[in-house]
Image (cartoon, rainbow over all chains, first blue to last red; front, side, top):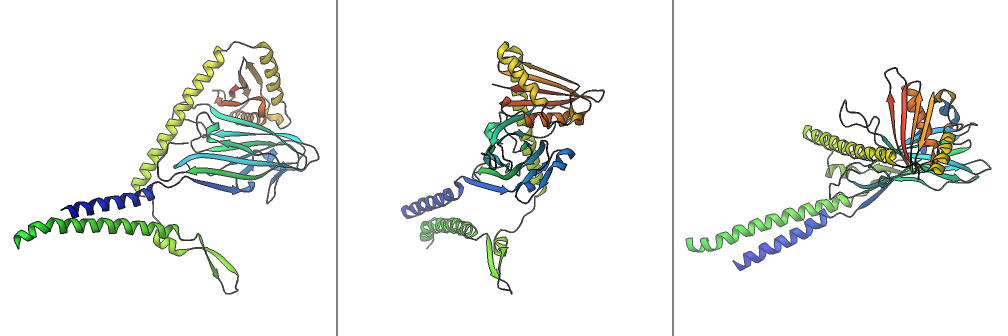
Length: 183
Length: 197
């Protein structure tokens, strides 16, 4: 009987060790990169006429500002954290200030039909884009939004003449061993 | 004989149970490891000798594609509905707090005047098309917050103006909460509560 008890204890110990190894997966960071033509598009017909869609960038080749919107595919179920990033580039001979704004949630944000929507949250960022150069990252994390994102972050940028929206990134930190709350 | 069986029977039965558990756990563990070890793409030489990158069929054989069952779909929809509801409730509470904060703030005359002027300038930026000019624009700043109220001729123009304004506002505000309300006559109001310092 002592042998049986010992064998049972050993079994439980081995099974527990193996099971722990499977359940406690390390947090995993995933980065999805894309040139902007997959994620961004001009906001209006006027902007459409100003923006050229190049393979590597979408460039305002007009003489007035253009507005462009980008949306990102994000993991929304097992995400611990998420952030989106865009870079701008400037082909002109003078530095320019550019503004982009991160927006969370969905249109007419309301949970139930007939219930008035809440206000949509906007987080603006303004950076200088050097002459003939690249901007620092315009970046929004879920933690930048007071009310969270619901797994949905969009970006709206005003591109001055000669300025392009360039490479874009979506980062998510996931843990498949737990079911975390919505970001 | 019967006495012997009474003594050894439970031990044998327990041994079988233990062996079964161990075999099951080890089998599951080895299956997981073999899935993890499958490379993401297989490289094969085709007839021309160039390398082809293809998804490995064997990984599909190990983990066959599954479909969302009706129960999965109901569960996912319920989860999503709850997450949307949670976010709306958070937003409603924070909206109410910000509106109350703006109403309660004492005016800092110097800051308020300078900020109102800057926010008026944003509305005159070259990116705004003429058709998207508000019929009225009221900006009311206090000590840290501002309320921006713009009237536009239609809902579409209201949505456009809110987008242009908020994508242009840059470092003039830190964070803003925006709504576009359609009036009974078809015109619209864009209302923005902004935290500006």
